[in-house]
Image (tube, rainbow over all chains, first blue to last red; front, side):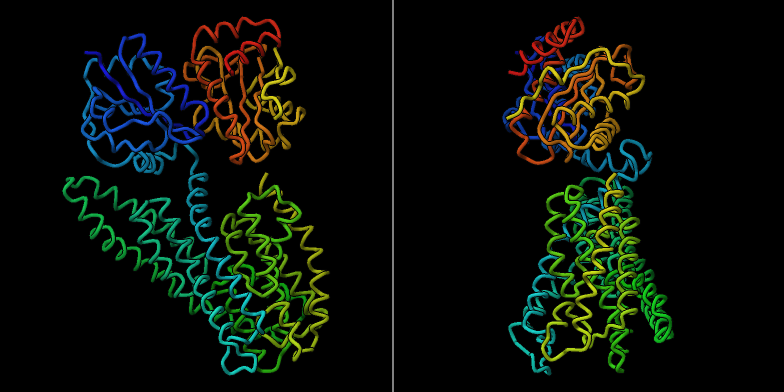
Length: 467
Length: 150
């Protein structure tokens, strides 16, 4: 009876090597007079798929792949597991080895993807470490994006009813608007946990996801903002990966126990405590910054502008930004309308920067990024700074300094023109409110000037980021 | 739909001492003939793909490729080198025949992916490689490749 071999090939790009390996194996099989069926995992998807019958009837399996081809299907069969290049270079050896029968039986263990991940950490080889880190970060950001958009836009819509429409004590109160704002707020609150969870998931799959969500909740609750979420994500991910490695030696019967008990409990214990320790000082940092800022209340507008600008753009939603914002609202309550104006300007700037960058330099962004950036015109105009977070998270070292410069310019201009703003939020809508007239015209005129400078800056800098 | 492989996409006996130079030449031709709009990105994309695993495989042939937002329409660019270029090929031999595949980022490019894969597959045949290495001019190269692209 003719020997039947099955194979699965796959390379990351999925255009060339996947099919070259298929061709090479098919030719080699013909030369040796054996049957072969090769399943390919290419760009267009899985072709020539192996059926359960194919697998059952196979005398041996060749996995020639640099990506996950679901090798778990072959548990219990004789499997050779090599890179796609090996099949291209030396298919005859592989076919001969299957024919000889001198092949170990595949046990369901760590998936190839996880093995590759652990190997990468150990040797730093294959793709560069930088690329791997970027990939994990991207997973977090791309999952977080819809939350920001959904939550942010709903909140913005609620402000259309009036910027105090959520407050029962305000004459503007509108129950529907209040509900919208609450729902929107919940969407945005999930931002940090989701970011954290999916960074961790990219690193350590399901166990990482679980712990990542919780670590993200801790980061959010303790006010660390999205920067804390990023740190938490990598922390959770690599610690869970370490746990997987450590528990790897346990016999198979513990697999269920690991998934439902060991990983969650031990993982949360370690990561949770670490996150707690790391994030607890945030409260103190926040208070310290606030008292520092209050001292500058009446100082040089340029200096104050730069400080407020940098603080607001640095960690949008985090302790530093919050300190600037709360100081502003506090002083507003005391009758200082000038201070808050600068803070508002600085908070509105980051999302608008991303919007203009996408508008003028659109080809530097992919489709979903561009759309999110256009949404930021809405979010920025209504003082929802968080819209810029996904963009900052993608490339913090480059984007955050750009945002800081932009916000500083906005804040400085605001202080120089002595614009006043009586509302702690609402953005352009604050200026539209009929009952508030102080400096609102100046406020809006200011943006035009500010935006112009920002546009030039951002286009220039975003280009640099993508080169 | 614009042609995948025009005569202008083929250049023989270029002077290049490294992979990077070959990629620059490929990128330049790609932009000149309207397949791409950014030489820098094409070069970077090709280099990045090499980092994942080498595209040089057997007998001095290589198939560098990149899926890239700078690619406007799918295309095949062919460069042969006057002297072999170090490429860390699977068989260790320097590369003298590079067939570059340029693939657009978005899904609209899938119609040509099958063609590009067929091209890659056909290069696995030793007789095809032999025929290509013996070609004297661009027309011959193009007709051999197109024969297998059908």
